[in-house]
Length: 98
Image (cartoon, rainbow, N blue to C red; front, top):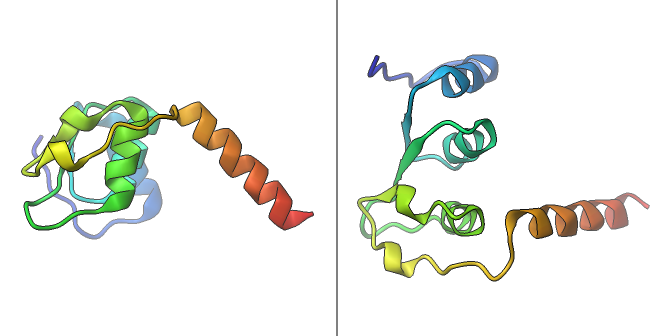
């Protein structure tokens, strides 16, 4: 619908992403939830700004082409895939807890 939402509860935010035909975002969380829910997305990474969390997420998930308004060649392709990174993260959290 082209609806823009700037102030909504977390449940509304996730529901909108899940039910969208496509998402345009500039946030890490909008990018992450779009990937998790399989919703097509575009993430604005304005020239002159660089969010390393978004760049790494796009890299490990193979979604570099979803970045717009940026120098995509600055985003390095990851040597690891997303599943490897998830497993490393889980192991790190277990180390912290024990």
